[in-house]
Length: 537
Ligand SMILES: NC(=O)c1ccc[n+]([C@@H]2O[C@H](COP(=O)([O-])OP(=O)(O)OC[C@H]3O[C@@H](n4cnc5c(N)ncnc54)[C@H](O)[C@@H]3O)[C@@H](O)[C@H]2O)c1
Ligand SMILES: Nc1ncnc2c1ncn2[C@@H]1O[C@H](COP(=O)(O)OP(=O)(O)OP(=O)(O)O)[C@@H](O)[C@H]1O
Figure 1: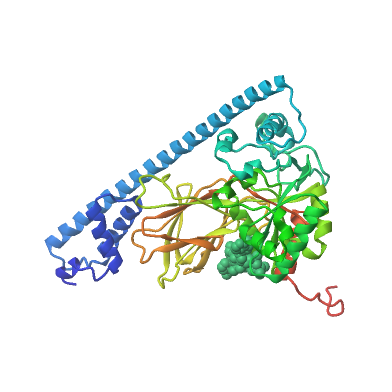
Figure 2 (figure 1 turned 90 degrees about the vertical axis):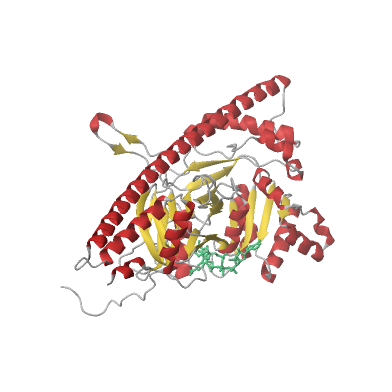
């Protein structure tokens, strides 16, 4: 190779050449780009024949080595600074949440004692002031008891006082039914929430009760408001919806909410349906969880995903009726809807708390990791793929700042355990019981023989970054929707969300899960071997 050849970019892809150029232009090198610059220098050195080179070439090669070293140090420095900043940010957010909660408690206690002095009726009350009063009282009560008994529906996740000022019609609706969650003990409906208890007595470490037991939901006051969500463009769904709305209103005396589209369909059927309520604009959807006691879905798994996506915070219990082709998350049969709903409204019911993932896109242009766009909550998975590009995706994956691997293939799926039977399964991931907390890390068509899927613990934050030397951008999609372009330098952060999706079970979590993989996938279906034939003596 002649010295002049060394200056050319012939041994590099065009993108690498352009990346180095843009980096020197903006002068602000990211740790990943630095890493790749170093890699590029190393590659260049390796490709340069040493024999027969003149002195200048040797000097040049030495200079490149020095540059490579400097780049590596800069990359390491930046990575550790980022990790430190992330840790401080996490501590700050924890502290802030704690302060908000303390303030809220103090305010509630004050208000409650003032109201108690005035003598209040603790029954089910109609106006919004009294409603929050009732909720506050239950909150105080629940805070005392939830330590012992489990999760309570009255956990207030943000300041309702300020919220009620901005709220619209939805606040004037009826109250939300109160319920209690408890963990089954020895197959019985127990009254105690058993945490993992780690004991360190006398140097011996033991764990006692496991927390992941079947969860049971018991209403403490009758549910009054039901939201029905339906799969669009299905005649069978429309017919069932009409029957269900009538039955819920006439026989159960419940308030019924539907989406604006469905209300129009119902009114086209009969003007008698004008009691059915809806919302006027999407901003009202953010307050739905405060008023809806129960969500009913009529459709397939996609309708359950749709229902979950409507609740960006806490989600009311969902009763999913199966009107799709598979139905991994839809255990209820529409033919028996009256019996099913009777038993759900009466309670107690077994529920599956389905974990969700909180996903945030961080742009290269952002000043820090926390300057993000609107986050997405997914019940199944977030997929990062190559979109319409015919190039391999190149994705750098980190788990809590530890480098995991580089995905070179069609893409990567970060899935919940509920989503383990969906796209992740098709890409070779394991099927996991939905109550197992964890994040599935499943590559899509990796161009390597040894890339097996992983399951990561629930507490980690996964970061998927598109490196600067990637030949094409990547695309992120959330439960198969809302595609977002990830350009070179952009990243996706993914961690467990604090708001799970409670779905009612036909029998219990395990029975429903096993039934769904047997019925839906014909899992391990094989004719039993006949008794007659050769035997071991
Ligand atoms: N190759 C694949 O298997 C593939 C490809 C793209 C998307 N998907 C899945 O489709 C989901 C979106 O579903 P949709 O209904 O809006 O789109 P859709 O109407 O295209 O349905 C996709 C299929 O996935 C099934 N599905 C959805 N969630 C499931 C789950 N948790 N367990 C088992 N099966 C499940 C649905 O029942 C449906 O049959 C995505 O979240 C993704 O998991 C799968
Ligand atoms: N209320 C809704 N509004 C808008 N879109 C919806 C609604 N409910 C469901 N969808 C969308 O309709 C699509 C199909 O829904 P769903 O999966 O429930 O039915 P299906 O495809 O017939 O069932 P299966 O997936 O079991 O074959 C999904 O992509 C889902 O996001």
